[in-house]
Image (cartoon, helix red, strand yellow):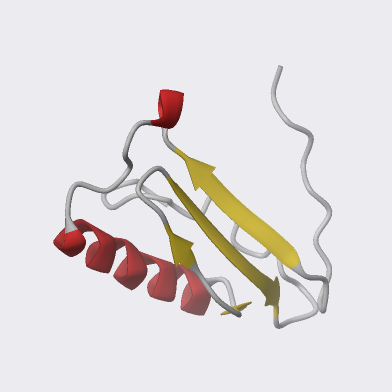
Length: 86
């Protein structure tokens, strides 16, 4: 069963996470981590999202942040990996 759509509103604080399957690593090396941070920065700009912090662990990522506009969900389906069509 799919998750319900999350309600978003300006000023709300969200805790965004991702995890590897069965505690598997999600980054291969430091270059991979740097590439993820580049993508996170671009997604934050595209979605008008303020990322307060981030924590990159071998098998998970966490980043609290909030939308900066009155219409935060304007661009649904933002890719989480390179090459994903918008």
